[in-house]
Image (cartoon, rainbow, N blue to C red; front, side, top):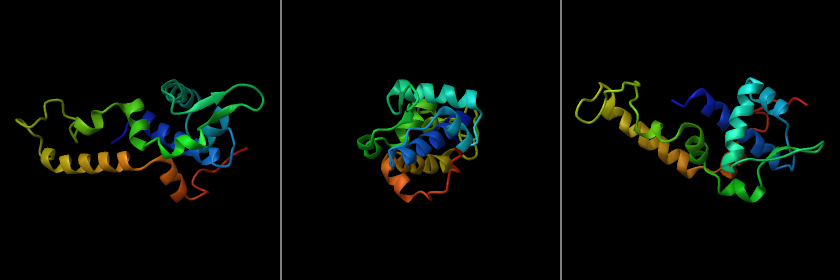
Length: 144
């Protein structure tokens, strides 16, 4: 449903958020290793997320990626999806067909509308704070 970059981006942001709750900045290498993502691909994703302001970074020996604690309760999962995938997930065909629309629906068109609406609702109502609070602390295997 999500692009690969969006999947990795969601995992990266959740990992960074989890580490930010304990006031820890994390390196690109640590993030990539912990979310099982190629480092170069993770770097490009983090560049987009940093440019959008969802993730912060600092340089130097004590630097790394982080999210301000106050921002955890305002950043929604839909914000991350919007940066990495845009809104196509809410409008595109469930089968990925270009010609699918209201007038020429694919066999799943009207069933998929409900799924898209539910997905949008879930992404827009869950903030990083909510997800991190409910997250198993061992979801990502921190490799230091």
